[in-house]
Length: 226
Figure 1 (cartoon, one colour):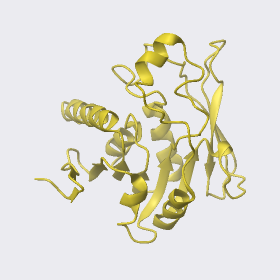
Figure 2 (spheres, helix red, strand yellow):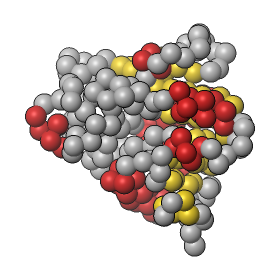
Figure 3 (cartoon, one colour):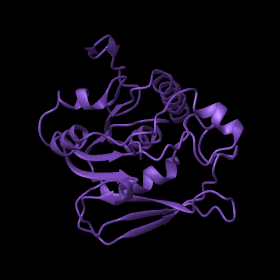
């Protein structure tokens, strides 16, 4: 049974033990349907506006990931930030160092522990919390084929499942409703399902939307086997 239709796009039924819904649509328009403070925590990874689809990639990587999609050429609009802060009580924003966000002492630094790979040593996330800065070391090396928790990379900015599980354990509490506005590979959706957090996500690109749907179904099927 389909849950809802928005401009011809359907939210899929719950597959796991907790509600998990993803919309294939523009998140700015989608967020307008939700009331103020509807979500307890938004963990988002919006485009940084640094042209990552064309930068720091070899020719093979460009061919695989860009697909003519200029997904990282512009930062989110002012309306995006307005809606994000309206519908969520707290926020964690990957790439927060690229955006004009309120001052915070509660930065997160993900140390990728990737040695001399030539890729960035880590990434930063801005948070709305009043907590000490945290550094989390989780090995993640560029576009290597031996991804820790996937059967291959499905998105150019894919982050590890372990990272999102750690974020939820550190910053979310039982019963929280989690939001992601730029779902990409869907790692956070998997983490929410495994840790029993209700989840709502948005992914505007049809190819990535379908890829994460398949990844989620496969993940839930594996969990049910144990």
